[in-house]
Amino acid sequence: MNPDSMRIGHGYDVHRFDSEYVEAKPLTLAGVVLADKMSLVAHSDGDVILHALCDAILGALGEGDIGQHFPDTDPKFAGAASGDLLQQVLLMMGARQHYLVNVDITVIAEVPKLTPHRVNMISSLANLLELPEQRVNLKATTTEGLGAIGRKEGIACAAVVLLAGNA
Ligand code: MG
Image 1 (tube, rainbow, N blue to C red):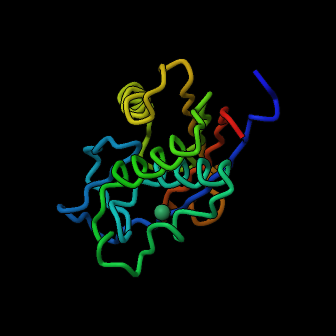
Image 2 (image 1 turned 90 degrees about the horizontal axis):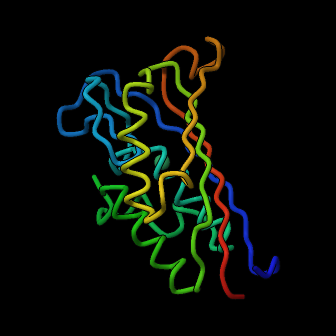
């Protein structure tokens, strides 16, 4: 593989928890709807993992960020399924003749506990990204009670992706 054709990208996203559970907007992470009766405040479905991934891929392509491509001022994207946004980013990647080598994701959250959802989330990510599960790594950490995340006010996610391709 020509090392010149490899590109790394990093993405980071944070969403605040809604003060109450919004039935129309259940907590959705990595495209999986969790049954934890929590909601995130967001223009779209607030899937921080998919948003961080979109930003990481866009970053690797040198294509700016998710806000540029899917502005949250545009009513077209209100309540958007983040899986659809990710599909569009993957199409851009394909059009640029690049493909994903692997992704590494770190969710930073005090709640909910992600261990029970991990297997489903990895399977969903592998599906969305069309990658074998061994190339999708998902980690979770807390902030040991420090700061806004530690006060259970929201969820953050960091993602790193490696792309390979032509040009
Ligand atoms: Mg976001």
